[in-house]
Length: 507
RNA sequence: GGAGCGUUCGACUAAGGGUUAGGUCACCUCCCUUUCACGGAGGUAAUACGGGUUCGAAUCCCGUACGCUCUACCA
Image: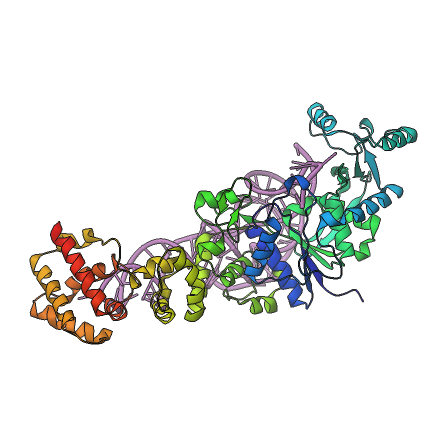
């Protein structure tokens, strides 16, 4: 029985993988795993002019980071390879010939220049039944002319012959019944002059050969679905055709339209899953990973963009997503991407993630910030103290750098307006009292000592706490002051107080 | 221009003929906190418009508007 669920993600390796692409992978993956099926990665590299070095590896790296590992791929192999369309050229040629033989396709000898000229002359030109006969192809030309042209190796393409009148009807899992009158679609090129198939031919042939049971793709493909359905009918029979689902688009946060790389740059958020550097321009586009997202959070918010399980639950592990996923609950309408909400998901996942694991994930970020960490156990402790105020992994740097080194800048401007001689005296005395302490006092002892000293100087503790905080961390942020002192310990505390006192009196 | 698809708070969405149209993010207020957060309690805020069908419509039907996608020898 051929009822096994097999789905594929079929990107073209032309650059970084963006949100919409990853979500398509995700829905494929969730659907496959939910049904105990297989998830295949197929590389659609039939356009040699758009080939980009490293893009395929990038896709695989991204899938790895996300934890969406294919069961079959160019790397893993599988029973239905090759999984790169450029390596399947001969297969497509064969099916294109079959279509010609059956009269469902024809040779076209028009040059790109011919077509351009025609488009100039005829407004809204379509290569269809209305204009087919005006063009240079095996329908308009005589048999002998055609064989002559072929014999001379005249560059040519193969086009599908769209029937004059036919209604194509199919059921989309998300949208229900969709109907097209094929008279509005043109005779799409199936095989290009270089012998490579276009998407239209390749997707149908490969989905058949790879026994794909369900085909999911972005909504932008809906208008060309009739071409694919016609090809299924001509080549393999509609009963073998996979079930289709056209996924809603991910839109720009403001205005409307498909989310693009440009929007991210303009609005200051990532669009690609991971950093992508264009080999020709050397430009690097920042990714969610490097921006400080946890893959679990990335996957989680992507899943919630256009889908929900019907309850109020929003935080899902991948296992929970697999268990709950149902394509029929996917929205029809596009969803605007909201970076703030994405960060909220990440924050929730940071809170959920064990400090030891966070420490490991954070190490590269600290390395990059050139913050030296001498003891992992100290890092883990610090993480526990600041994690509630971090939306991104990169936030840990700004939120905790003062635990590892004295702050480089002290916001004295925030202290100065209410600064006075008796406070100066107090902090000098505080430093002195620290010098007389031994061991490693805990926060509560430190606080008690501080309050006693404040009372003897006749200053309210509240007037001293903020200056002390700024002296220690550089600004108005961070965990409890005495917890910080306990962590950075007495000698460092004294140094920071004395340094700040110098700054304050110097002004 | 044509074809297809879509439309519930600012955003993501719930409600599949009967709810004061619910939740989350964001925003605002208060509490907690002698910082910033976390947490807690409240608040502002939506069924695109017009017709039907029905005792009853966000929900079903029709029309309009608006938006989006496609309309390449790109995917």
